[in-house]
Length: 172
Image 1 (cartoon, rainbow, N blue to C red):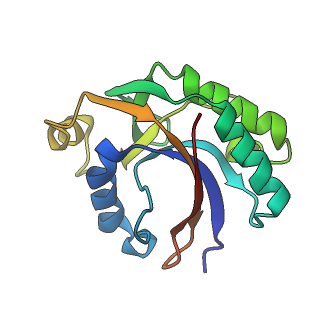
Image 2 (image 1 turned 90 degrees about the horizontal axis):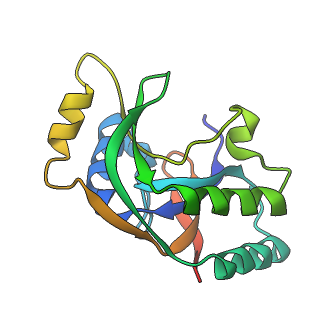
C-alpha cells in the first residue's frame, strides 16, 4: 500500500488532457476527482498531511501576496532518471513561490531535500522503449508552445483511488 502525500502545485490547464492521459496509461488509480489538476508545476512537496487552520491561513496569505504570472511551455527537458518534462520560461515566478513557501514552512524542503537544486518543471513522461523525446513532442503537436498563466495554488492529495484536490487559493 502506498502512503498518501500532499503537494502544493500550480495547475497548468493547457496540458491537462495530455498529462491525464499519461496518468491513465501508467496508473489509473491516481486519476483524481473532478477539479484535480494532473498537469501542474510543483511549488512544494511533499507537504503536511494535516491541514490545520493556521497552515491554511498562512498558505492563503502567501497566495494573496503572489501576483499571477505568465510563462511559456515549449522546451522539453530530461532528468537523469529519464523523466521528460517541460521547462516553464521564465521560471522565476515558480522559484519565488517555492522560496516563499520554504521560508514559511522550513520543515518541508522541496522533494524532501533529495536534490541540491530544484528546477521548476511540468512532468510529461519517462523515457522507455516506446517513449522518446521525439514521440512525446509528436503527441504534443498543436499543444506547444503553450502560453500559460499561474493563477492559483492548489493543495493536492496523492494516493491510489483517493487522489483529489483538497483546496486552492487564487494568486494575487
